Length: 138
Image 1 (tube, rainbow, N blue to C red):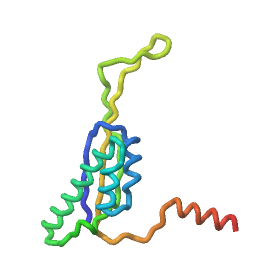
Image 2 (cartoon, rainbow, N blue to C red):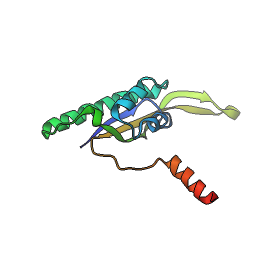
Image 3 (cartoon, rainbow, N blue to C red):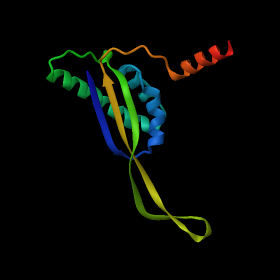
């Protein structure tokens, strides 16, 4: 069973949110939760809320389908941050040669998918690169 949680137009750039999302992708729910609690990034608090919402959505979906879902069996299947709307403020910043740039606000959409299905045995990309490099060396 999969559950999705989305937070739209969150006031953080998607590049900064992706740094934290890469940390929790593929982890168990409890491990991801603890990692977000102790990560010293501003995006961690926002992603923590989305992860909690995904867990609550999974429990509600399980209740509707009369299925038992253990929170310890949930894991982060997918998580990503897409760029949201870019709003221009009515303020200007000085630019070279007498020009002026408008200030931009960067927003993003945060999406987390948790699943209770069994994981497929996959290696991480880093270990695949290491294995390929050792085979090429031999």
